[in-house]
Image (cartoon, rainbow, N blue to C red):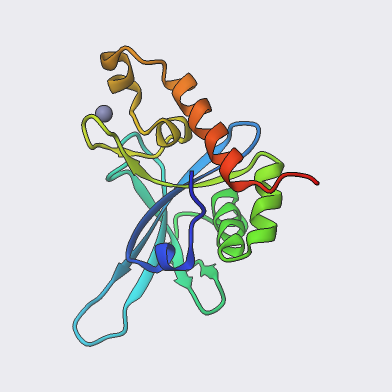
Length: 165
Ligand SMILES: [Zn+2]
């Protein structure tokens, strides 16, 4: 598990998953589009289907200056809809280590997409990201994905979260 950085979010094809302690999750894609001589525009979308490479619905235009997303006429979600609010919240944590760590302590996660170590498919489900192995490949390899994910998470916490004095 890694913290998403400003550089990552602005890189042009960032995909990350935000999850809550109750297991709710949203996968977001932040894609930069450059056309002709015009300044690049960055669009934020949320995954709304089963294909984590292609099933995304447009939410709005990202303003990196304000670290905000602006919904537009073409947005598939209202400005105060849950996906838009969750995305805004995640953006507001980028670069704010203390608030992000506080969210982690409360059970929230913002995790970069990964690639399966066996088949190289895109991983966006938190347990798959943490395990580094997709669900089907874990079965094929005869490993327990949940255990693998828990062990990785424990190592990450051990390495990252400051110990109480
Ligand atoms: Zn795989």
